Amino acid sequence: MNIAVVGLTHKTAPVEVREKLSIPETEYDRALSQLRSYPHIEEVAVLSTCNRLEIYLVLNETESGIHEVNQFLTEYSKLPAKQLRPYLFTLLHQDGSCT
Image 1 (cartoon, rainbow, N blue to C red):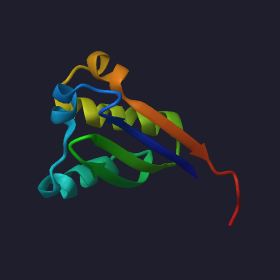
Image 2: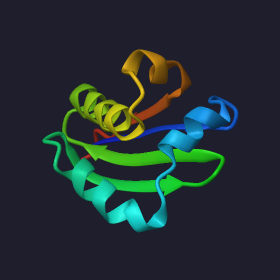
Image 3: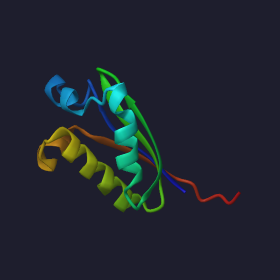
Image 4: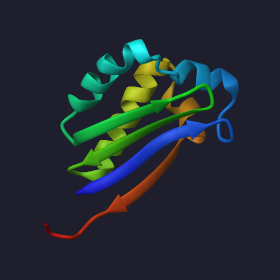
Protein backbone atom coordinates (compact mmCIF):
# COMPACT_ATOMS: atom_id res chain seq x y z
CA MET A 1 0.00 0.00 0.00
CA ASN A 2 1.35 3.43 -0.96
CA ILE A 3 0.08 6.45 0.94
CA ALA A 4 0.58 9.99 -0.33
CA VAL A 5 -0.54 13.55 0.22
CA VAL A 6 -0.50 16.12 -2.57
CA GLY A 7 -1.38 19.70 -1.84
CA LEU A 8 -0.54 23.33 -1.37
CA THR A 9 -0.87 25.87 1.42
CA HIS A 10 -0.72 29.59 2.02
CA LYS A 11 2.99 29.03 2.60
CA THR A 12 3.60 27.39 -0.78
CA ALA A 13 1.14 29.14 -3.13
CA PRO A 14 -0.23 32.64 -3.69
CA VAL A 15 -3.91 33.34 -3.11
CA GLU A 16 -4.61 33.44 -6.88
CA VAL A 17 -3.49 29.81 -7.23
CA ARG A 18 -5.23 28.65 -4.03
CA GLU A 19 -8.51 30.16 -5.25
CA LYS A 20 -8.34 28.16 -8.49
CA LEU A 21 -7.82 24.94 -6.53
CA SER A 22 -10.38 25.52 -3.80
CA ILE A 23 -12.97 22.73 -3.91
CA PRO A 24 -16.28 23.86 -2.39
CA GLU A 25 -18.09 21.31 -0.23
CA THR A 26 -20.85 21.10 -2.86
CA GLU A 27 -18.26 19.80 -5.38
CA TYR A 28 -16.56 17.24 -3.10
CA ASP A 29 -18.55 14.25 -4.39
CA ARG A 30 -17.77 15.07 -8.02
CA ALA A 31 -14.08 15.65 -7.27
CA LEU A 32 -13.81 12.43 -5.26
CA SER A 33 -15.57 10.43 -8.00
CA GLN A 34 -13.25 11.82 -10.64
CA LEU A 35 -10.15 11.07 -8.56
CA ARG A 36 -11.35 7.52 -7.80
CA SER A 37 -11.89 6.93 -11.52
CA TYR A 38 -8.13 7.03 -12.14
CA PRO A 39 -6.64 3.51 -12.36
CA HIS A 40 -3.87 3.95 -9.77
CA ILE A 41 -5.94 5.65 -7.04
CA GLU A 42 -7.60 3.22 -4.64
CA GLU A 43 -8.81 5.59 -1.91
CA VAL A 44 -8.96 9.37 -1.64
CA ALA A 45 -9.95 12.10 0.80
CA VAL A 46 -9.89 15.86 0.18
CA LEU A 47 -9.34 18.70 2.63
CA SER A 48 -9.99 22.11 1.10
CA THR A 49 -9.98 25.39 3.03
CA CYS A 50 -9.16 28.97 2.12
CA ASN A 51 -5.54 28.37 3.16
CA ARG A 52 -4.85 24.87 1.89
CA LEU A 53 -5.77 21.98 -0.35
CA GLU A 54 -4.64 18.50 0.63
CA ILE A 55 -5.52 15.32 -1.23
CA TYR A 56 -4.86 12.16 0.81
CA LEU A 57 -4.39 9.05 -1.29
CA VAL A 58 -3.93 5.31 -1.19
CA LEU A 59 -2.25 4.33 -4.43
CA ASN A 60 -1.54 0.97 -6.03
CA GLU A 61 1.43 2.52 -7.89
CA THR A 62 2.97 5.70 -6.49
CA GLU A 63 4.47 7.45 -9.51
CA SER A 64 1.45 6.89 -11.76
CA GLY A 65 -0.98 7.82 -8.99
CA ILE A 66 0.83 11.09 -8.26
CA HIS A 67 0.80 11.86 -11.98
CA GLU A 68 -2.99 11.26 -12.05
CA VAL A 69 -3.55 13.64 -9.12
CA ASN A 70 -1.43 16.29 -10.80
CA GLN A 71 -3.47 15.79 -13.97
CA PHE A 72 -6.69 16.26 -11.96
CA LEU A 73 -5.34 19.45 -10.35
CA THR A 74 -4.26 20.85 -13.71
CA GLU A 75 -7.67 20.16 -15.24
CA TYR A 76 -9.60 21.42 -12.20
CA SER A 77 -7.62 24.66 -11.86
CA LYS A 78 -7.26 25.21 -15.61
CA LEU A 79 -3.64 26.16 -14.91
CA PRO A 80 -0.84 24.68 -17.02
CA ALA A 81 1.04 21.95 -15.18
CA LYS A 82 4.28 23.89 -15.59
CA GLN A 83 2.73 26.86 -13.78
CA LEU A 84 1.08 24.79 -11.03
CA ARG A 85 3.90 22.35 -10.23
CA PRO A 86 6.16 24.75 -8.24
CA TYR A 87 3.40 25.36 -5.69
CA LEU A 88 2.55 21.73 -4.93
CA PHE A 89 4.05 19.51 -2.29
CA THR A 90 3.98 15.71 -2.22
CA LEU A 91 4.49 13.59 0.87
CA LEU A 92 4.99 9.84 0.46
CA HIS A 93 4.89 6.78 2.69
CA GLN A 94 5.22 3.22 1.51
CA ASP A 95 3.92 0.55 3.83
CA GLY A 96 5.67 -2.75 3.28
CA SER A 97 3.92 -4.57 6.12
CA CYS A 98 1.61 -7.50 5.60
CA THR A 99 -1.67 -7.70 7.49
